[in-house]
Length: 172
Image 1 (cartoon, one colour):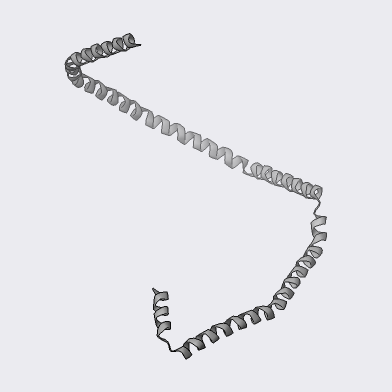
Image 2 (tube, rainbow, N blue to C red):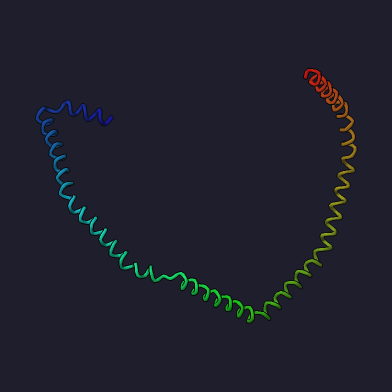
């Protein structure tokens, strides 16, 4: 749509305006080429400077990288690990009486809870079993009635499947 509008307006311009637009477009392209050419030495120079700085940093950091001896690092890590283990053991020794007392209290509370919950659990279990028996007694007549009603359908289905199987066996 915009292209169509621009084309329509361009067609209505006088020849001198069209000529001026062509000259302006040509001059704009020339200036862009000149700017790109003038900018190239600066961008190339900047790229060279960045590369030089990277190389300089690599050279400055190389001694540090080489000084990282893996054996020394491993030894330091092992030493720190042993120190940490010893700290944990010391802490366990210091807290020993408290942790033993806490363990006894937790065990006692669990025992008390079990003693309080056991009778309730037993009562709920018996009630649940009683209700299951009641449901079974209430449903028994319906189940028996359903069996009686479905028996003829089951026999008919069995007869049909048998005849279908026999027909299939004869055809093969």
